[in-house]
Image (cartoon, rainbow, N blue to C red; front, side, top):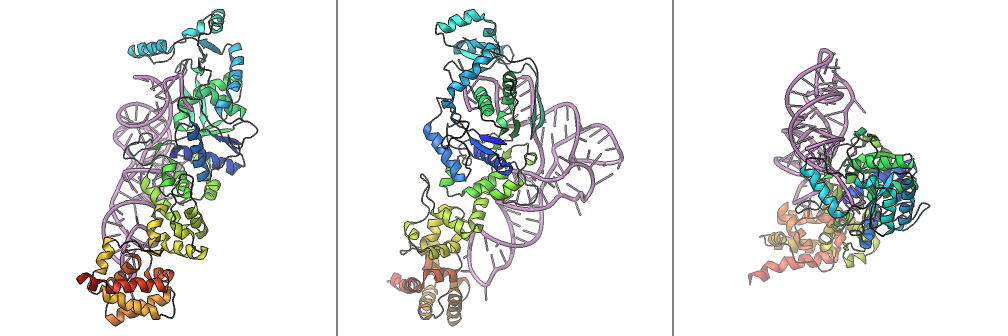
Length: 488
RNA sequence: GGCGCUAUCGUCUAGGGGUCUAGGACGGAUGGUUCUCAGCCAUCAAACCGGGGUUCGAAUCCCCGUAGCGCUACCA
């Protein structure tokens, strides 16, 4: 069993591509097969090396590693189509000898005119096949003279039937497509041709790809037949959609489509994967968050949906927060510490230097308030040495009538506290409240504001315990005298 | 235009003839969590595209319609 993911390096990895890669990866993992990465860079105008690097980096970040690919090689390489050009030409030869492919000398202008005329006459804009009847001697002479030409495939006059794993039997009537180009005049293969040659040579057994390729499949089936090769099994996964149900794309106001954008926004790979994995796939039970291992166990082609799915950033956000709240402490550490080459560093430098134990305890305390890793600096701010200026709401809490008294009393109580742990701090605060006859919000908020500069965050006793007595007392004392200073 | 695919709460989906007064999740609303929160808990509102069949019985099967999307390139 061998599957592949075949991106064209013409931009960044799209969430739809990431999902396709994930499904392929899952299928390979589940059946102990190989997951092949092939770069489809035959569009020289749009393909870039930078894009290829970006795609590979995004896939690695997601943890979707490949068994064979452009960087690590494999028995069926090279894995970059631009390095396989001789292979495509070599495979065109027998087809030409068999009369299944012919030289076409039509120019772009002629083709455009032909298409325009067909459309105007209400006919489908497909190639007329006029070069098909060129005498081979004449064609040879023109080619020998250096006249640019492409190679077109002689489309057979029979219907094509596809047994798709998600769509069932799909029949394409004959006569729907004209003779299509297989080798361009610049010597590069077209998508359908390169795809068929490569999938066969790379011994791909299952092609899991997006539905947009469904209409290409009859062309590919014709090529398999012409070569006398058995086609692989196909599964066309429904598209991921914008909120208006058009194919998801980069557009103003819509959710980010690039995997890298989510990474830079502080989303973790597990969240993206578990969200994407459930777009168009259902595990068969009520689980809503599945790990890769869960998905590997659950993944079957016949639980793939056939209708498109709208991408919902709100649900992805929930998924990300869920992972941040629930993942094992070590995983949270790893996410926080990781700084990708182009990923922002979400962990403040001073926090990086903390002893592991303290860092883990603080991360554990603040994780419930994290929606993305980008929230880390904000949540960690109270724990660094120089607390940032209080937020307006905190300022307000400190300006309350009883705030200074509360802070001063808390400072005194904390200074004498024997049990400097969350439990001890909690009872100290309670005692302060009882002595002053203040409770609830009026009691806690000024202390919280003095300690953290904010009005919300983790439980107060936990914050105090983590902060340490010295810093707590200092900050509370400062808040305890402030109103007097302000009055002057 | 042609061909193809698709059609359940706002969104992701379960459902494959009776167990559906249609289930779960996100989002929303409400309440709780002897301090706060984007956290946690609880409750509520919210859907079978339309029309014909088949059947004792249809969200489930068939047909037609409608709508949306995809493809129709010397892009992939």
